[in-house]
Image (spheres, rainbow, N blue to C red):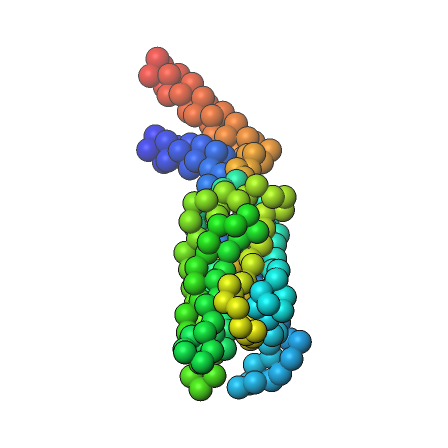
Amino acid sequence: MKRMLCVYVAVVVLSAFSGSALALTFTNVVDWNLMGPWQGEYYRVVLDASWNPDFSYLHVLDLDPPGLTIESATLSLRHVGNVSDLWNPEIWFATTGGGIQIGQLSKSRWISGWTTDTWSLSENILSEMTSTSPWSLEVRLSDPTSLPDGLRIDKSVLSGSYTPVPSAPEPNSFVLLGAGLLGLGVYSRFRKKKRWG
């Protein structure tokens, strides 16, 4: 009987003070549908610096429950048309709004079809993301070469994990804790009476 009561009290205490401290996941998708389809996908054309000096887009995280810190994140970008050869040199880069390099886009020749690049985001990028409210990531695409080039982009996916803001214990948890302590007190008193007589 005493063991069962101790187990009951332990369960009540743990349930009363266990917050949601486990990491949760998030995913935010930017999907362009301005042109196409090409190879079954709708897309947007991004022109390089000689045509359009600043192309950027925004991932905004609407987290529920709200976040305390971002543990890790990756950015994936699906594209085609990053052709780097003698006749058409293209070197596309992805950077943040604050100028931190995310990565260089891999070759994506028209004949090969759509290519997806995935980058793990650095601590500096995660800090930049959490400095805004709501948390967001501005991505800039640029090609510093002098020839007019175009890149087709289909979809950008920002995903990762975050630690939520700890929630306060619910009033029901305190009621359960009180009931457990009251039960322990009654049991102790009953046991004393039984012992003395």
